[in-house]
Image 1 (cartoon, rainbow, N blue to C red):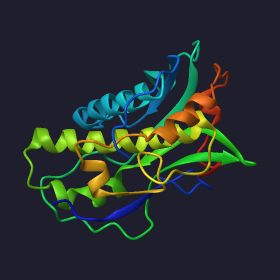
Image 2: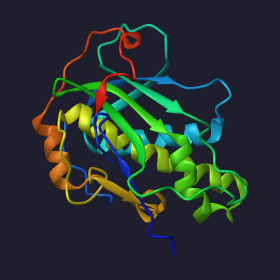
Image 3: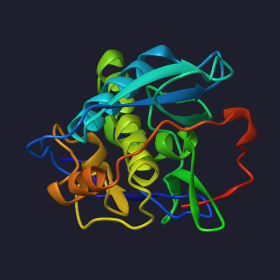
Length: 220
């Protein structure tokens, strides 16, 4: 049984972080995510992250197009930037420090009360958070679980951005904090109340240079 550890997913001056709901009928809208990550980032977890993020956002009526940070910004979709900080991979042993209470798994930038389309994931914290729970899994399974957990965290940040909502819901991917059970469970989705927020807040194509956004902005 997964340990009931707890960590936050936040908006950055932000503070951030529920079960696969029946999908609602929503228009299909495109989100372009510029991925900023070190070239040595393990490919397995990142691929699993992309799949899980895409599946969760599809429930909310969005398709995701992934691009390398620094590539063309020409698109008819909504632009966001995602930075992966640290090495996003669970080691094959559990000799990592336990995550401290209230640690941030991720955050999204906020300036003057406005949610900006810039998020980051703290892979060091995520590794500390889930490695003790998945250390006995085979390599391929461990990569999949790690990446799927990343995807759920990223989907939480995109919830803040796409719904322009700084608050959280009681359960599902939009709740304020995650346990290891949440990020590792077979099913973990947005609830109906959250999906309604996506529906009520249609987004249009954004026009900006992702390089103009920096981690120095505040966040949730």
